[in-house]
Length: 107
Image (cartoon, rainbow, N blue to C red; front, side, top):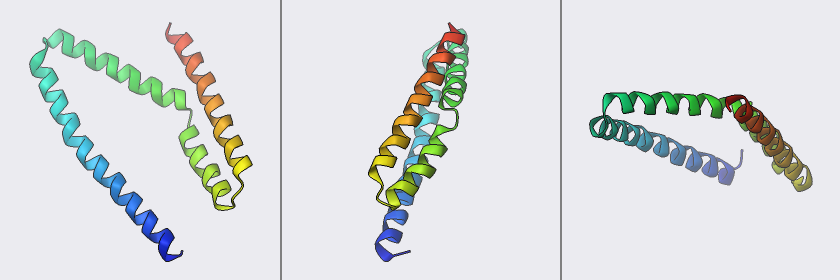
């Protein structure tokens, strides 16, 4: 791996790690403030809705986040921009169809 590539990977990993480390306390604080601000029944309803949304988002993505990273990285490394565009378009289409089907199931 070249020095410039290694520097980009390390820089990206540091930004990603810093974002995760900042999002954890922010999530804790928002949960703490929310639990103090609303009634226990409303708090329970909020967390049930949040859980359903998180599960639906995971199901709606159908693993395309991993697929697009794998194939997009390969095509980008080879400079094949047409195939890269095709992979991204196809993954977005699959996710959109699956999300609509999942929304129809919930309705």
